[in-house]
Image (cartoon, rainbow, N blue to C red):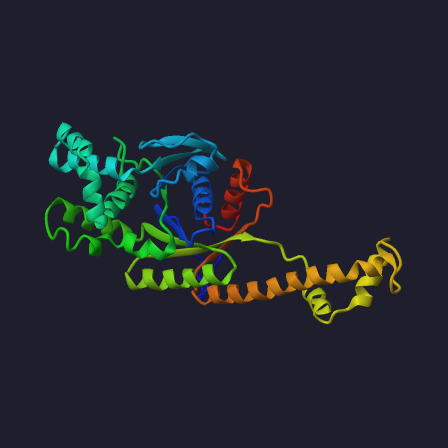
Length: 338
């Protein structure tokens, strides 16, 4: 298990709501799905929630578009189960109106008139309360025996540029409702989001812009009093060259490379021979690889400054299919995140 800068290994055992965010293009939906699958191992039940309406979860699990209801989408090693829910803001608002105002058919009539879409458009804070509120309700939900329905809930949340505002619903609805059911709902949501039961994980790549957005997101979340969990470094490519090989590349050691190629049976090493002709393109690729390794070390160092537990997911060259998702889930389990 990874440790923070103080040498303390994180304890995710008490965390029931895992919010996963990241810059667009970093694979946060894949990371969220892998985490939900990893957390469901050994007979546990997890709920994976999508809030952006992209149906990315359905595609990853090779399912039809998810409805606005909790549906079993996968089995996990050891008999666990993953359920998924794509939250529709309009239907969530209808649920809310029925729960607090008992509108019933009147609420559906409002939907036909377009009033619900109008309400969530002019009051985006209300939309976020509905989305986060559904996740928090799932976290707290219990069966008749008093046992939690889900061992963990994983939310595929908006990108890091919007995550703090999305989660800080108390501030967003302050000007909308200072008392009453909406205010009380926002207060209840914030109690869950700011509790030890919640962790906000940030997904990044070892590239300058995603790392910078991760650093900015970390700073904003901390300033808002929201609990930051870990950093997931996604699409990590293997380092093919060791340090000595990198130094040889930097020194442009043509002769050493030509001899190595010749020794591998690829022709003569003398100038103009077959092995020697391969040196130039190989050295160019090696230099690019060495430069990437140097840049990745710099980005890793910047992430290390955050003092957060860090986990890595390999780049799957063939793309992420269902088998690849199970592979990534296993990696998160091996590293102690799931």
